[in-house]
Image (cartoon, rainbow, N blue to C red):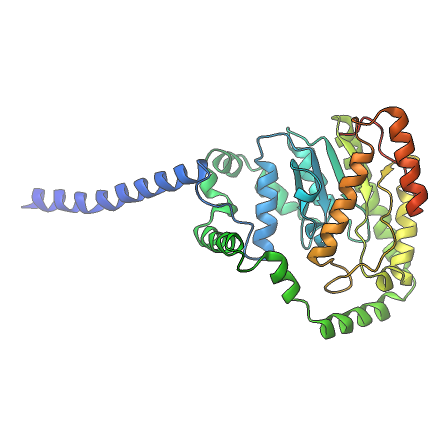
Amino acid sequence: MNSSTSNSSWRFMVRPLLILIFLLSLYHTLTVGKVLPSSEGISIEETNYVKVEKYVYHDSKIDVLLVGSSRTAKLNPQYISDDAQNLGMRGFSSTLGLELVKNTELKPSIVLVEINGTIGLTDEELIKSLFDPLTYYTRLYFPMFRTEYRPVSVFIQAVRNLLEKLNIITLEEIDQARVNPAFREKRIQEEIKEKNQPLSQKRKTNLRQDAKSIKSKIEKIEKSGVRVLLYDVPGDPRLDSTRTFSQERELLRKLFPSDKFEWLPDPPTREWVTSDGIHLISTDAKIFAEFIRDQLKINSSNFSEKEAIIAVDTSIRKNELHGRSLPNDAS
């Protein structure tokens, strides 16, 4: 009697375990085979983790990598290069992105670094968790444990993909629908009032410290053969021209002089449209991403030396841009 009961209990325990193992194996197979859509994240935090993990666990050469804040996060890397990736993250900055580049073995050919007042935002705990041996190797060999393959996120991503495929609605249209003109203008005016103050000494000190950290990371990355280029993402011209932003920009240009650091040219002057004064809406983010792509093409090794000189000179004169150009052998 006891033996029969014991066997029955054992079977009762083993069956769910076998079912669980089967389901996990199936899910693992679907993720490895890329049958399931990779989620882009359904929250700010999750989107950041997805970006970070996609970079840390990437297994193919990245042509161009963007690192920066939420301003950079708005740029679609596919408008720059088929082999580009974006590590712009909401709530963080280039400091975090450069730390990830420094700690990974397979590095990109070019790293575009956003330089503005956000450069000090980082997360040391996130870095530690990513490179913890147990966490790292579990996610490396079993993609189903990565943030991008959380079941709920995968389901929502599948619905998004279907809506776009059927041309019912695009992510750009969703982005545009979120913009309330009245709220946007009110927000911009509030920001202009706040930012029309001189830069405090404390703020200047913090920027110098943050710049020192960025410089150290850039130096280490460049020693591994990576070409590093600096840039800033435009915002609403009225906000960009405020006293605070102007002084921040002037100080950072001195801290990262063009005779020691490679800067992308500033984009042509235009009325950049944002959702809040700082973050470009999708259409303008596309325009800026394409501007970056064109600058990289101008300096591509596909040009002869003479053609490259003429192209760069024409571009600078036409748009009255400044900053050191890419070397002719930039990829």
